[in-house]
Length: 335
Image 1 (cartoon, one colour):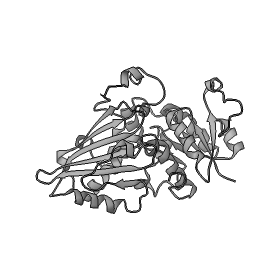
Image 2 (cartoon, rainbow, N blue to C red):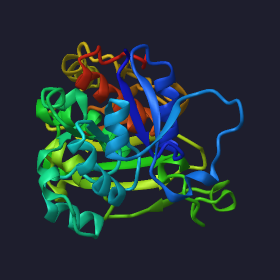
Image 3 (spheres, rainbow, N blue to C red):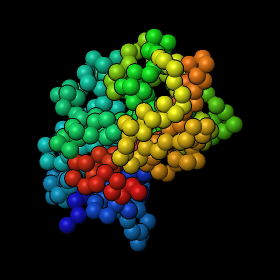
Image 4 (cartoon, rainbow, N blue to C red):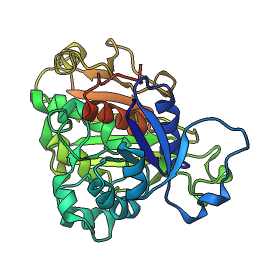
């Protein structure tokens, strides 16, 4: 019998993407778990097919024999639901920011509210497989990374490990995202009339994804400048990352660093020198595409990193983590 994977928050963009991707997974069957009181306001059409529904309760998880539960919910809801789901024997992959940071103090500083499950915060494995693969298979609770940090860390960390970045000069990450990154709940800022034909920066100097970049890359906050910007498109993230090279460096040198670090990584694609990724290449895929440009005379270097915020930045990466937890090939259901 195929393992069952429950999805909480399946009406949101990331949860709906999970349901879509799991439909084509050859070994896992999705169950849509209802946790909201207004679930009855969203009835299924008569005669409709698709994943079955069940209440989001520990009793239902036990009765259905659900192996893994995805929480595509706000952080406060994830903190509320995770303990009981874990106690019922399910493994949990949380797509919110509830369990990504290492201490309650860090969470309170960046999310502006207290953390209610500090013991789970200490236990959670950070789910960026390219760098954290060793911890994930044995974990009960996996914190799926944020979309912006996924693109940033995949671009930045190999260069820091290789020692080619002049850290004293700092790194600037100019990050642009489609509107689905703000979630499905309607707001004035994400309404059609505000977004179309527009381009705007937000959460300048205090974006809650910054500590994830620092945590995985090893950068200090003073070394990293990050600005998130809202693109008038539905999905996709493109980050343009600027730094000074520590020594004489060419585009070929940077690409060689990436090629060595990501050898065998199925979801990292490198562009040849002189070519850079764009959103069209990555939307609805689980790839992170990376391209570089270098001015050897001045030491200026640019890396462009592109992902789909709903796939590699959320649901697709969550399925990578599920595959690791279940002992399946990491690419299962994603290629």
